[in-house]
Length: 292
Image (cartoon, rainbow, N blue to C red; front, top):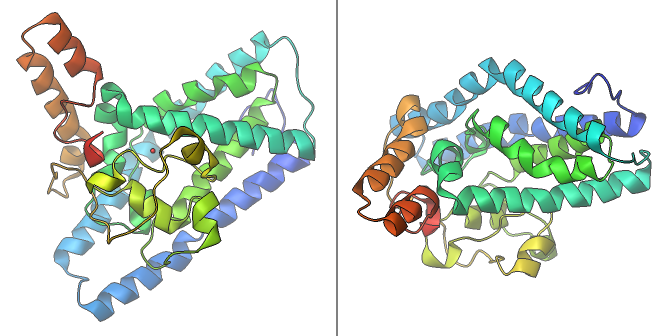
């Protein structure tokens, strides 16, 4: 996992990379089962297939921009490491500490993506725009996220963790996100209280009032519990945006929220209104759940 050539990966980082690959590969396990279940239920229709294809198509610009994103992260985190006054050796214990820190930083990255309108409009709304919840939803991530999200993890590099270790921990928690995008796994009792599970992530994608602004965590739910954003799945979840996109066109998926944001900015009639339209989610009709 040679993300940053100036910082060669250790065996620990290679094992983290392998674990991420295994988690990501669960797509090949859950997706066929989801398709089979929908076929049996008679819901694997043209609209459902188009929605899945729309979600998968979002990966195309992400792949095309992959080299540019990688170069950006290399420069950003490499520069941060050069400014750090010390470096922390990579051991099993420091890798655990780095993983916990990256998990915490992900919580704030994700929360900001929902509550800061520019981040939501140009990037994260893409992920939440589907009214379906399956393995292809996990693929529905804007390439723009690759230029916004890395900034939140600079503290982990500044404190001295090897940038490759930070990248490996980040890759692992992103890979964890793959398997939790499914309705084929029900509630998991104790695990739902402390880990990000399919049940907890269904809540996060829901549009009901009680699910608004909940469950931002990556792997651990302790941050949501600590900061008051944890909620259990109580009733069947309805997915998507509060003002649905209702389109499987990839261009619409990427740009509709930007258009809504721009219209709110143009409609502002005062300085405070303009500032609110620029940064606040309160006036966004298309936001997910009204506000991870």
